Image (cartoon, rainbow, N blue to C red; front, side):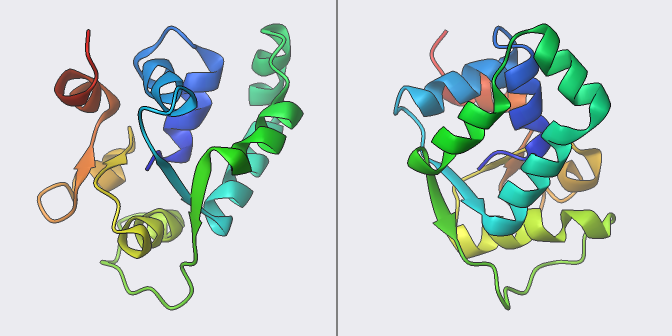
Length: 135
């Protein structure tokens, strides 16, 4: 499972570590799990003027990306899922998706989530790539 920050980074820099992870998803090497709240968050973030300008400058069609996304994800329902209280309340949906999906890993660059790595399967993008993606 990819946190929104990883997905946005992957779109902005395809050659980056998050970009490698997203390429593995597109190539069918990794399964991507999301929930409706996370898809909604992704839509909102991609519409932020600063992000929108950077994506437009790279000629990235976010409409097409969002249209194709459902074909590359497994969607889970997070209704009523109990999770540890994150430091940032906005991360509740991320943790609920991780728990509901029983995902192997949450890949995130968010320090508020990474501090939970001793209790939940959470890795930074670089740690995931080092461990699981061939060089």
